Length: 424
Image 1 (tube, helix red, strand yellow):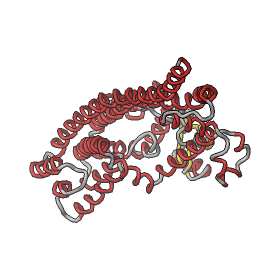
Image 2 (cartoon, one colour):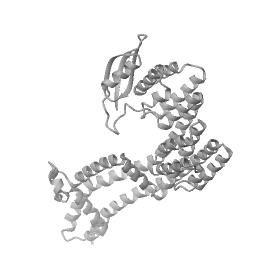
Image 3 (cartoon, one colour):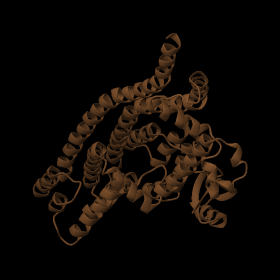
Image 4 (cartoon, one colour):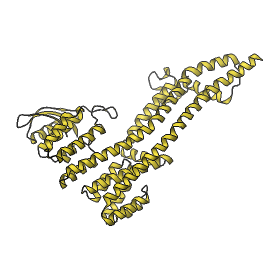
């Protein structure tokens, strides 16, 4: 499926602009004709490379405002097309404005709101679309939109918390790496030459000084990596120092690793690896349980069936390994087994979750109980992340100081020793 920007004239003479997905340009034109409009301009949107598309992105804040205001308008009795048109005109995000206009046009043509939103999976998640679909079927779309806004805000808060906790360590680590390579490439070679000139060719330096000078010599050399046959075939490779070749190899490795991680098999293995990291494992599981509980609760309260809720919730968790476990649970539930008992015996799910679901099944209040579970685990995530942030920050500072201190000692130690010898 490709994405097409279009401009068309409706039956009442109004000019319409929007975005739609179709197999090709002819199919896009046919879709516009089916909606009762006359296409004027239909052009395929240029594909953007993954990771570099800034224009076609909708911020969480914009989505939350859209959801809340649409809920308010529906509750106030404003017709859905008029509400969508109002929201499209007030948004500052040009791409989101085109999305809302396209949705509005589809709704005016008789398409359900959920189906119109489903054309933009990059903006509206499966959870979002399924909850809207349930709200339309049950006639409670305004209430569903309020719950959606709250859920999007909660999910965004967890992500923001994680990013904030990791920001400082990442900055410190970046400074450490840049400082290390800067010293090794530009400062230590000159100091090493001075040390050898002062001490002579037979000078004996401490082991840590030898290691530092060896690393510096390797990074600035032009010979070590060029013995690899594959690298010799690359033009101009011989004019680059080993450090440049290493950086290039690392960049290529990162690109290919990112591509592999975005494949289903690579993503599953990457998520399985993350769940083996001792401290990170606990954080990821708590985040997954919080998302599962809140999403499943919202879907159940919206009238979605258990099996559909399990399928959608699995995709919303964000971890392929835990999603696979939910699929196995869903298969057993489909065969008539109790959801709570299956969750109770599933890996990565804490026993308390299974027990709470069993109580919810017995009382018929599974949505209310899971909402409390979600709130509990969201508080747990906040506590764990705050604790990690308080530990990681001093550790990173100590690491930076240790590296700088080691480099300083490897340089100042021999200089002090030579000064004493000269003075003696």
